[in-house]
Image 1 (cartoon, rainbow, N blue to C red):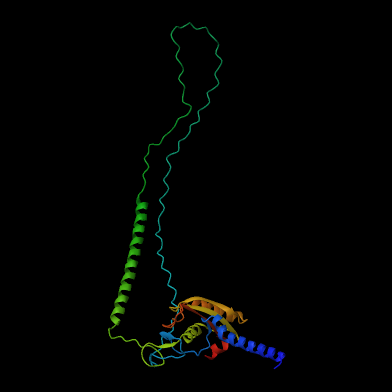
Image 2: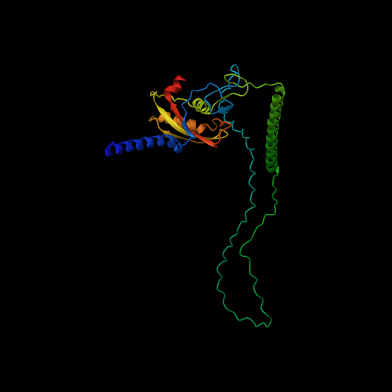
Length: 296
């Protein structure tokens, strides 16, 4: 083996070792929690989840759980009409004071000066006459208290009606609670729906998550492209609650994208992690395909 052959051999051996190392070490750098849900769709809601691709438990003849319809919005409370309060009549003002304008004094006639005897007595000062007369009414003004009495009576009646309505609501609530308690019996048994085997039903974790979102998603009307697919990333906590959910690849159809986004916003609980899971959360990738949904 000449020198060139040795170099080629060493280069080929090194390249093969590098490929083997990538195959062995490379998966360690990938996120073990991110997995695309390429699992069969199950037809029941499992109580527990496992990592194995198996399902069992429950009773295949048990009635499946009814789909929970969104709770209707509570009716707005009936507002009691405000009591009509009659405004009291305005208090009449007392008789206005009439101002009497003084009549102008006639111009004094010129009087010829006459010498008057000197009088040693002190002269009297002239008394000033009032320029106008003030008239004050002494008639007492009576206020009728009937208006204020009727307003207070109307408020009391409104309070009595509100208290009677509250008592009626409380009595109806107590009757309903009593009816529920009376309808329960100690021998009530709960049957879990599942493929069979008895006990709580169980299935693969990813299959349970896929069923949850598949049931919650509805293809909107007017979509003609059955190949439209939306990819979403969902992070689920250990107890099954959804931590975050977002679209990572659009389908190019705004109707499909909007329907998937509404589904992601609506689902708050997916499926609990398996009991033997070591991580506290998992991130999965869900593909929402129009054709698969219509066929399913």
